[in-house]
Image (cartoon, rainbow, N blue to C red; front, side, top):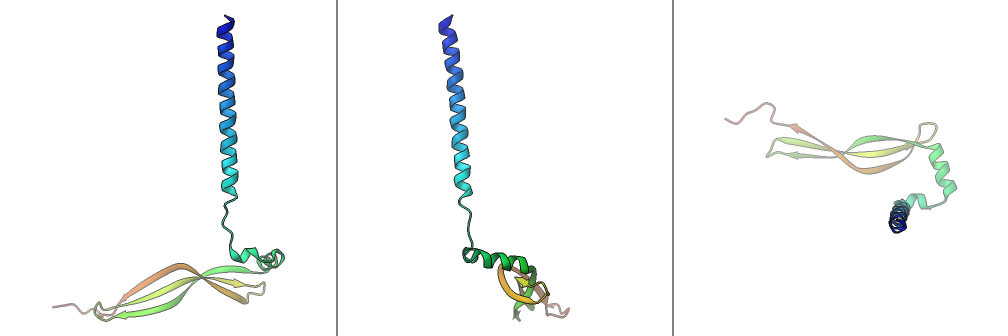
Length: 117
């Protein structure tokens, strides 16, 4: 009987040890992944300067017309709008505009209701 008890206790200890090691490995992996946070070059400068900039400025997202093309063969005008981060100080004065990679396109027909006959 003591042999079966010993094997049962040993099995429980091995399972417990395996569980603890697995948990430690997973915890370590998430800590390493957390260290892989991308850092903007803008945030690598003077921390005090960056904090004062963040406190004094807010930004709004605005789309601005950046290009207009007319395709006479298709009878269309395509307007390209780019999104910008528009930063303002506490008085509402625009201090900088940063373009983003987001675009919207508007297409207008220029055939004025004409149809091919």
